[in-house]
Length: 201
Image 1: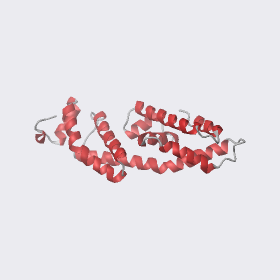
Image 2: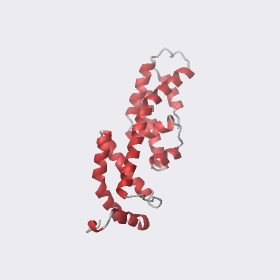
Image 3: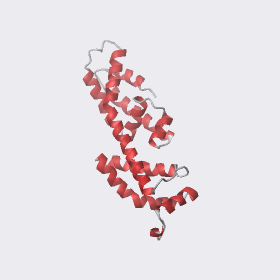
Image 4: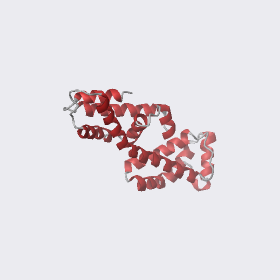
């Protein structure tokens, strides 16, 4: 880290990151903005874990895209805008959650009639929702984008500003959680198998 950080403007530090991949400059910007961005994210999300995750993503994305970013105004404005976008994505994922659950249950019950068809839809829906709520926020968001909005893994990576391998890890983890929860659904293993097949990666 620079001993006299005051002598470096945000934009000067960012130029060092862009042109020299300067880790010290990146660390300095991180220290300057981490706390205020975290506070802003927490005010919107009301969750320390979720706030820390989106702020971390903002900085990771800043470094990954450092060569192509063109600041229209200040770096501070760019970071605040990036944070708002990340928070919006989380809100959007939560908004489609209930639509997704309704869609999945309806699809299973409509397409697959069986001796188990009298099973209460509400009970199955609650079981599936419980499983998805066990997923970490980002894992759940990636899962919804894949299974409800039908985005490709590459599209998800681009939208969220994360790597393709990270998307794959989130989807694998989501499926593992679903399998674990639905296989233990003693009233209807058959429906569990159908749902897992429906969500097969």
